[in-house]
Amino acid sequence: MATVRSLEVYLDLLSQPCRAVHILLTCNRIPHKVQTVALRKGENRTAEFTKLNPMKKVPVMVDNSFTLTESDAILKYLASKYDIPEHWYPWQPERRARVDEYTAWHHTNTRPHAAEVFILEVVLDGALAQLDDTLDKLESMFLRRQPFLCGDDITVADLLAVCELMQVRGSASGRDVLLKHPQLQRWRSRVQAAVGDSFHQAHAILFTIRDRHRLCFSDLKIFLFLKEKSLNC
Image (cartoon, rainbow, N blue to C red; front, side, top):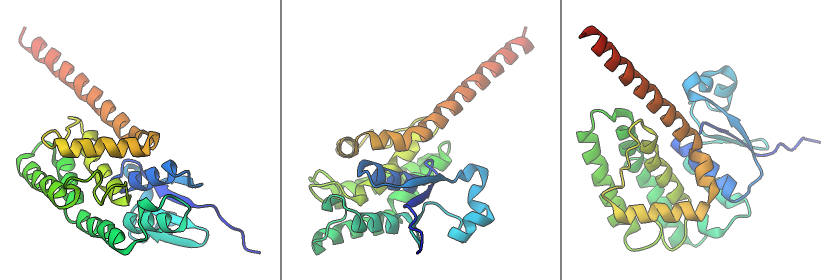
């Protein structure tokens, strides 16, 4: 008789899509086991992990003998298979199509533009302008006057978007790209309230590393200041 394996997910919580998967699993209490894959240590390039995903990317899900990659596919699979509230990925065709519409748009808009600001951080003008345009579209095309991106209830689309936009908060500056977008700030608060502690659990490592880098940068500035004083005595 074949052994039934529990659901396993291979994640690095410094990755935005991984955090979206983690939040969906934890806030819905889906039994699972997390296998941490530290991208910064190159653990995604090992022979063992490459067998799971030849693209060497996270997240990866293994459900018994079924292996699935790509966060969008994983989120929708989990919402479809497991006994969680229907609003995460609605069954009604029109409501489901709205979620699919956003997740398709997400990968060429919210995701690359937010990631560019996080990566560049210092050379910001062009990246911020592009992200601001994306945020305007996020408000006008999807959020409009409704509580969540695809209607009255939270869906996997909201998880993908909020994790992407939180990534910039993990930079040394802690920049909040939603400061000029009060409507999106209120949406983010509603998402946080809807998923509870799962939100903070998923983002804890991102903020821990941010704060560590801030401390190192502060120590460097003090060192340079003292060095400058000693050279000019």
